[in-house]
Image (cartoon, one colour):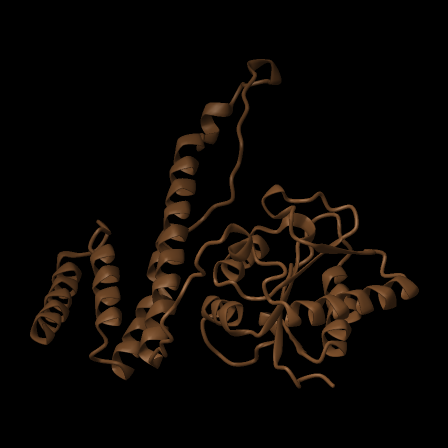
Length: 291
């Protein structure tokens, strides 16, 4: 019966890369991996099945370190999958490796046993692979070091200190991630906007031009960068978070960072800049008082 032994975390591609039918890896999970895991007495789990809120990266790490069992699908050599396998191996946690038949072996882990499955998902082949994976899980349970690089290399496993994060800490982590992505987006928009300015051509200068002039003009989509800056929703969210967690250092520092970014906008009036500057000084003073 499943759930007797706890969770078996499944490390595998979530989306379907080019060359695969839509829903292929979802079918692999439901038709092969999940039944095999249940036969071995565990509960199958993928991170996208977690309905609780929170930072997905934190959930992945938690499962990689704490799940009593895991299987890892090396098909497509997905970089996220390989990264997660590396973490699982570093902490010397039991894992069963699988891949679709025909996948080229990866040199660094070529010495570890790996089960091939038929990607065509033919019924008889699916049943045979379920049994093979279930048996491998049970054998790995009896001998957790069976597929262990740490044991093979005679090195010490990584250790971690169990730590619970306060809600404010997790919110701050998510906000920093959002802010970094927003900064990256703004930089990309700036580059596109500058490129538009460089290639923009006054239509009057095209009069009389023919194909023989070898004039090659590339028209890019118009992006209103000012609107993007004005619609900076993260500032509103930061204000909301500051109301909920007024003494959270991470959120205060992130708000200061975004305000300082706003000061770089030359289109702002002097009054607006002074107002932003005053808010920055107020927040900095708040941090100093805490120190």
